[in-house]
Length: 447
Image (cartoon, rainbow, N blue to C red; front, side):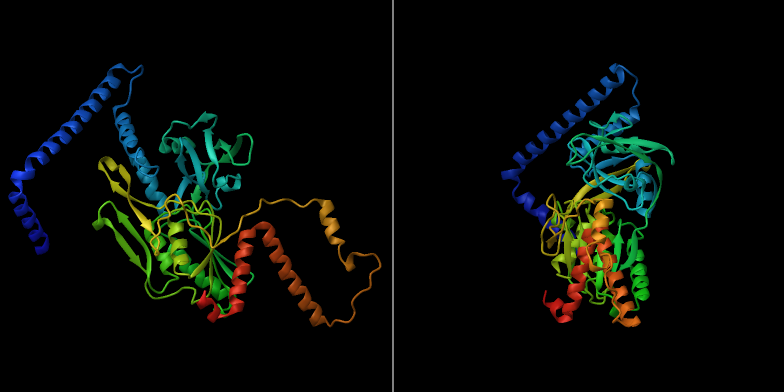
């Protein structure tokens, strides 16, 4: 406190000495600036009164003022906005893990609503909505010219009701309609499962439940596998994860790092910056990690991927991430509203900003679009072996144990092949883990 007082006194003394040289021009500039601001505010008041008096229809004063405030904020960047009391409440509910809607994270790009990602297990995902889709109309009404909050409001409605969204998708010649049934969205932040000898932790969002779910899920999956000695490593699946709470991103990255910076934020002033560092402890106990990302991985997802990539703790594979490298602060306002304001950029441990650039994978792996096998192709494949030939000899030289081992190996191979058809990127990640595990801890430490 004393240092602050001394700095203030020193500044005042310097100001007095220099008064005759600079005070006049400075005061004149400040007065001119203040006059300009007051003139603009007078202009706003004049326009507001003219709208109230002369617009063709009667207007709601509150809605008009809220629209003006939101217009001021949205002119700054796509992520700053005014939250009405209802919108602020919905945001609080969504970060707690349960809300009503379609199950899509959206942003705005050139006036259109763009899907950042569909959420796992939601109506939007079931209907086939993809990251990168543009929603141009809702129930036949165009969203062009609407604010993001207005467009989102159009997509809300009672649970069980149908909504028709018109989608423009890259690679499709014409827009097309998708029918979605609204539902209550209950977000399970983390889902764990075992694929082969790999533990797959699918993180769908960063809300208040993310780190607790990850920690409990990891413990459960490793225990079911019989311990860390029986697994090749961990896959962190962050695909189509739109982000969420910065604190949870820090917790998740810290879970796999023993030391070093996780992320830093830098605001307009140097004093506004912050730095988050890892603490000792590794949930994976040194096992190799592969992080999966794609164009729907944004914000908090990119913080985790960037931290693990920079510390060479994980191999990042997939496709380039979304590129949202800014931090928003939610400021409560009067009458239960709130302001979401971009206050900082974040930087990965190596000092890189991913704003508009995204995280580049160490290995680019595209997800091929699924293609169903025809009956003719399946029949032809079945006949491409000796066993498929009529009258072929049987193999009577193997013991029952050898036959059983061959059948188990074949079943594992068929499961892996089926996974490649269903999710090529995940299958690739598991293959990477298998290779890293085969190299041993010394080789992994050298990477």
